[in-house]
Amino acid sequence: MSAFEWNKIIGAVLVTLLVIKVVDLAGDGLTPSHPLAKPAYSVLAATPTAAPAATKAAKPVAQLASIAPLLAKASMDAGKKLAKKCTTCHSLKKGGKNKVGPMLWNIVGAKQAGGKFSYSKALKKLGGNWDFEALNRFIAKPKTYAPGTKMGFAGIKKPEDRAALIAYLSSLSDQPVTLP
Image 1 (cartoon, one colour):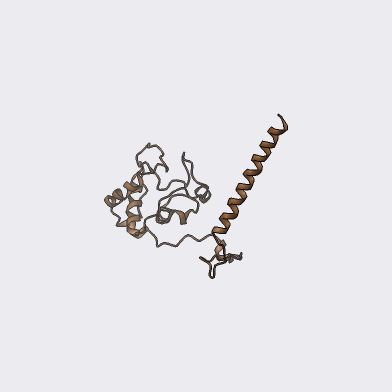
Image 2: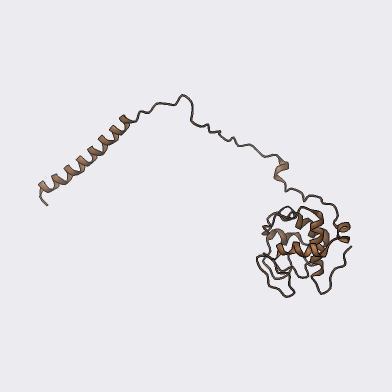
């Protein structure tokens, strides 16, 4: 390349940079910038504070009244209707397959987090069996009973409905656990 060619290339680059700078300055001149008298919105700066020790501890499982008196007068038909919600994620049939949740055949009296299902660490830590009271607390609020559980169900508020469901689940067994 000759010197003339190089001069044209360098000239084109310089003219391009000059045009960019002129457009930038013209844009700044057309849009005046002055400080606002009052901020458009306020931003509160968060100051780090230590949380009280009470909030760091795990919340205790809410104490519920014993389910035993309600189980004595629980309606199996009502429990069967309520169990239809469970079938979205659980199988209720003997020999049924696990779905999103474990099958519930023979669940009353069974070991918590037992059987062939991938349970959450929260349920594995609990130990114990699914007796009537444990089922009552779990069905009331699964995330409170076992923080970190995979079960996405919010729970059943009414004790009568929980009793009916537990009574029905108790019947789903070759050797049903006797209701109190």
